[in-house]
Image 1: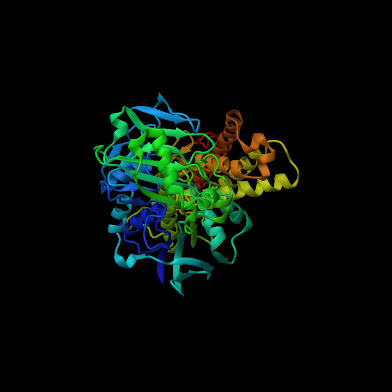
Image 2: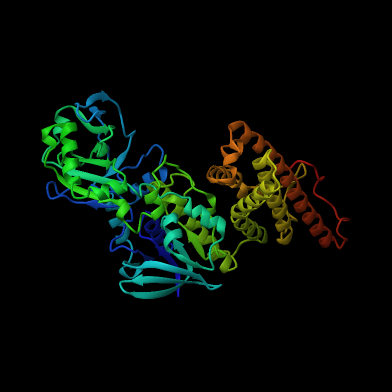
Length: 548
C-alpha cells in the first residue's frame, strides 16, 4: 500500500512530491497525460531553437514570494520581461495601430529556457518508480483506514491503495470527471464546481522570427487589439534573455467555439493580424499554438461554456479542508488562499497539504516526541500540535452558525456573530484541552498572577485569527447565499475592525481562563507535595485577572 498518492503532475503535485521526498516520505505521482507540467508547457520552434511558453510565462517577485524563492532554490536562471519601447494599440480593423508609452508587465520575470525547465528540474529529483504517466483517475473510494483509487490506463483499469491521497487537479474538472464513494458533501461539491480553472478555456500562440524587428523599430513588442474582428487580443515580446532569439507571444481573442469553427484558417488569420500590427516583417512567422479548451485534463465543460471573468486570487476555503478524516486532500492552484490560478497559488497549495500530511502522520503515530523532553515541554508540544488542527474546525463552526442564521432569516451582523461564536467555542475547547495535559508546575515562576507558561500557551494561536478571517472573507465572497447581503458578501474595513474588536475581547477571556487553569494545576501540585488537599496549599503569588 502506498503512503501518499499524488494525482496530477502540475506544479502543485510536483512541488509536493519534492517536499515529501526531501522529508524521506514515500510517494507516487500519477499523471493523466504522457508528460508532466499540467498547464506549464514549453515548445521549441525550429527557427530559433529556444523554448517558448504556451502556458504560464511570468512570475512577479514583488508580489509572489513563494514562486520567487522556489525558482531560486531550484537554481534556475531568470530574466526580466522586456517592456522597453512603444506599446501598440489597434482599435479599428482597417486602420494603423497607435503607439504609446506604458510599462505593461509590472516587473515580471521569466525562466531562461521556458517554464518547462522548472518541470524538468522537479522531475529529475524524483525516481522513475515515483512517477506514473498515462494514469487517468476515474474513482476514489474511502475504505476507512485507506483510500482505493481506480485509474484508466490505456484500455485497462488499475486499482491502487493509499493511506493518503492528494488530488492536485483543477477542482471543477475533478467534480465533473471523478466519482467519489461515498460522495463528497454537497457544500464541497458546490465549491468545486464554482471554482473556475484559470486560463482553461484560453488559447495562446508563440511566433518565432529570425530577428526582433520590433525592438529595432523602438517598439516593446507589447500590443493590444480591441476591435471586433480581433484574433489575437494581447501580444508581448517572447524573446530570450539576450534578445537575439526573436519571438512574439499572444493570447487569442476568439472564444473556444469560434476557434474551433475557424481552426483551419486560424494560422492565416493570426499571421495577417500580426502583419497589420507590426508591418510586413511580421509575416510568415513559425507558429506554435496551444488551445487549452481542447485539453480534457485541464478544461472542464463548465470552464468551456462560461466566459472567463475577472481573475479571483483566492478560493473557497471548503476546498482546503482535509476530507475523509485526513485521508483525502484537494490541491491545485485553484484551492489556494492567495494567488489562486497562478504558479504562486500552486506552491501555496502544495505547502498547505505538506503541513497537513505532517500533522496527520503525527496523529497516526500518536505524536511521538523527541526523547529527553520535560513533561511541560512534551505537553506544550502536544497542545501546539492540537491547536494547529483548529482552523478547519473553527471555519466549519463558523459555516454552521452562518447557515443557521440564514435559515432563521437573521439579517444583521451575520459574519460578526458567526465568527465570534466559532472562536469562543474553540477557545473553550482549548482551555479544556489544557486540563487534560500533565504539567509539573512546582518550579514554574508566577509573576503578578501570570504563569510563565502562558507565553507558550499563546504562541500556537499566533496566526489562528488571521487564517480564519482570510478563510471567512474568501468564503463570503464565493457564497451565493450571501450575495443578497452586500455588507456580508464583501466585508468593509470598518466591519472587519468591529469583528476584530470582539475577537480581541474573546482572546483576553481565553488568556485569563487558561492562566487560571495553569495556576489551579500549580496549586493542586503543591498541595499534593505538601500532603494537603487541593485548595489548601501555598501559592506562588495571587491569582490576578490579567494574563493576556
